[in-house]
Amino acid sequence: MELKDFQNLIKFVVKSGASEVKLETPDYKISVKTGSDSVQPTMQYVPLTSAAAVPQSAPAVADKSSSPSADSTDSSKYITVKSPMIGTVYLKPAPDKANFTEVGRHVAEGNVLCIIEAMKLFNEIESEISGTIVKILVDDASPVEFDQPLFLIDPS
Image (cartoon, rainbow, N blue to C red; front, side):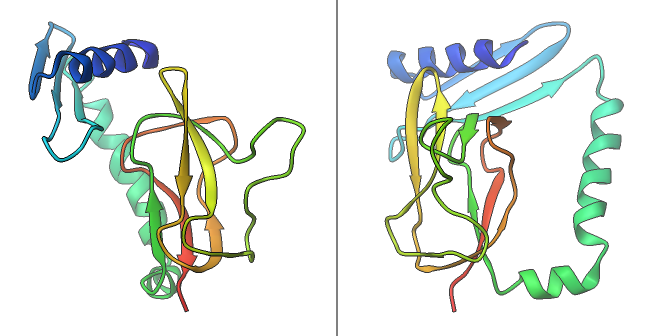
């Protein structure tokens, strides 16, 4: 199943007003749930045929980020800005423009950090806190998942 298929499924669930949709095939199992408080749904995708490959790759990524103990203790004081949806992240407003923000730049609450395109809609992701950008965790024009870390901000 491709990203567009996931986006179309989410769009259908949101428009239909259903609170939960489950889809199972021999290859995968998908559950899409929407909350009454939130317009943006959560989604869980579990590939059934390649289930052995997914757990092996996921811990490897987690091990890389958690292995340097100095980084984990330093990053504990930072606030992580996470993606509220799946889509494509853009760090600048247009290809010929400068980035919304860069490492070391101070951002105020409400400043636009990036744009996430989902289902041909461009959603501005704003900072919920004031602070300094410590790290940008995604590349421009790359796909992002729901709840994927995008930025680290030092609130002090």
